[in-house]
Image (cartoon, rainbow, N blue to C red; front, top):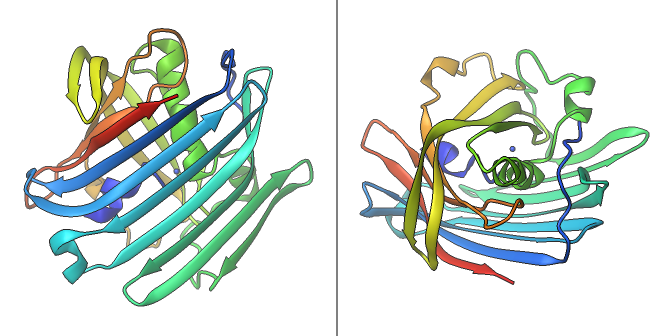
Length: 253
């Protein structure tokens, strides 16, 4: 269940209009089932200028979920924005879960993609992600930023990004649903209500059932001018009811 709530935080260059000045978004979310049972907390902070960007995120289980799955994730990513293109350079994630720990570090340059994963995965999936798929994808944090930029620049639920997280390669995509308004968590204003898809491609175990990936919905803040559209809510159906990631605090500077 937590996998689908947190996947959007942790999924080729796409052209956008670069921001005219530096801006920072500080976003904090609560995750819950049926709006009652608390699963965890998520923070996502992105700072961008016309030439560079940096992203930091944290995920941790809280409330009743800690009884079953004590998870703590910290991640950072950074890269360049040149001529409006987003080109990630470094990604670092530490994941503590159920008494275990894994750290994944990836760097991307002209010579290709290099990674250090400790401990490494025993199973790289069937089929494993190819070198071309790894090179042609965003890291997960940059993927969220890039998808939000596509939505904000298009001012519509239109766009997709390819993501590689060190093992799994997948696509995050949105499609139109409705224009609406959103009030909560420090944001009050126009929003886009989108269909949201998580599409596995490679790097998944042979037992992974792709048909069980639920169709989700997402709400994005609609910026007053073309730019980053922060996600405000993600709703995923589960066997025990709808799981939601909801904005708790929203700051832009």
